[in-house]
Amino acid sequence: MMEKRTPSGYVETEYHPAWLEDIAPERFNNTELFRIVTFFVFHSPCCDLSAMSRSLSYYNWDSPWRKPQSLRKRLISESTNPHLLFSAEARNDFLQASEKAGLVDFPKNKECESIAIVNNKRTQFISVFAHLRDSFAHGRLNMYDIGAADDYVFAFEDVAKNKKKNRYEVTARMILRKSTLLKWIDLIEHGYTEQ
Image (cartoon, rainbow, N blue to C red; front, top):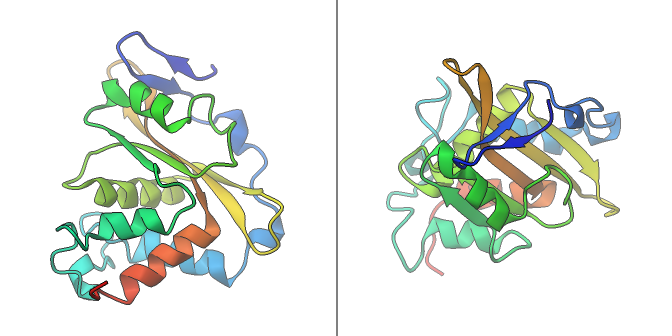
């Protein structure tokens, strides 16, 4: 089964799509990848997903989503796309978010960083962190060379199994550079500062 878009707005996929066949070359396996996995999987800012989680308040982000100094704004500014994040409130709205993000026929467009998620946590970026954690933990990612000397791109996907209908429904798709993920880690770990 290839990707299937339903009239009701779901995006269905198979358990092991072809784009997962050839996982990243050995050259991507370095201390930076270890740092990314450690932060987003073990020390995830999503406290309900890891026994070793570290909340944003651990890093002195006590009110991270308040404007004008919001963490959301700062995280987006660290990416290469000022229109980075598109969210859906439910799985049956994911197709629309995916289309807006340019993440249909995934992972075809690997040049532009983009995120489409089902916002299943209290804020959009906590949902992003949860979907990143799940993508790593469940092996739904790949890495691609982008021709930059010290950078590459991650393609992430998260799914939820609909047991009643025996199908996998996409809940997140993300194209993010390694450099962006490292900047996010630095930003969060350095804690809140006035800008």
